[in-house]
Image (cartoon, rainbow, N blue to C red; front, side):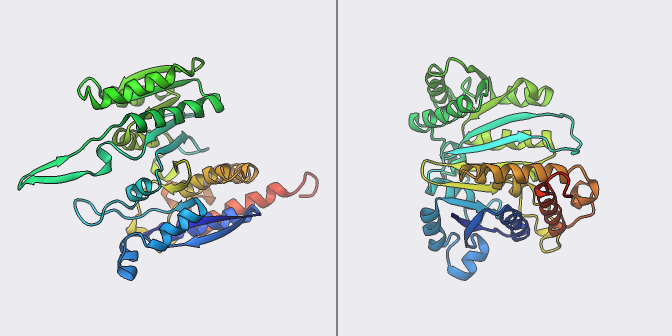
Length: 342
């Protein structure tokens, strides 16, 4: 069986980390039929569209995408490609597990957090307009449908994966209507999952509590903008955005992506660390039902992280992007050798 997957390499270091990830995925023996497309500024220069129609049609056909980092202009230019894809395909759940890798020095070992972020509305949707010159209005939209849907996603995941506790993160002390609606939906859903402890924390207090003691949390569910901020904060517990996977999930499509930037300053130099996209691809493999392949790569990746010389320079190693991929593939091949045959 071959899995059809839409591949969006991105820009900057995107093509390099994508090539490395694809090589490792294919080394598992799982068959892929990649449909590759450019998006963003490069796509606009070629096709006059930031997201070519063919790319959208491909995702509609394959239902699965793997996406490298894409540069988003700050304070102007085109809108976020990430936001556009999430809204287009109703990828309402952003799922980001936060777990340590071996031998990455951090303040907090053995972190195991799950961030579940509503992905389609709130302030992060970018619904803005200029009222009069010098006055801009941004609209925060919260709906019962989206809030209930993301709460159900979080609680159903918790039940299926034996997670014991969920906190809803909010600012309902100030935004009593919008965040109040979000909380009411979470409370209603929580009643159907009595085996899971449910709690609520105000978003600013949550940031402080996380920095003081991340181990007090298990799963966090929240609306869009809070999720963007808190998921990046939590990435710091395990070394930064270069180590954290991300999945955007809907009822019909899923896009798995690196959440770090495109790092144009090191693009094309074989320096980039592909770990974040690789770990995102493990979520993709599990989504496709290829659990053994995901475990195979995860075990090899963790072995590579135990050997400093095989790591990329951002974490003190000497390997380039391609050499890092070689090391992961080598560990995968070594694991296939039966005991006594090495």
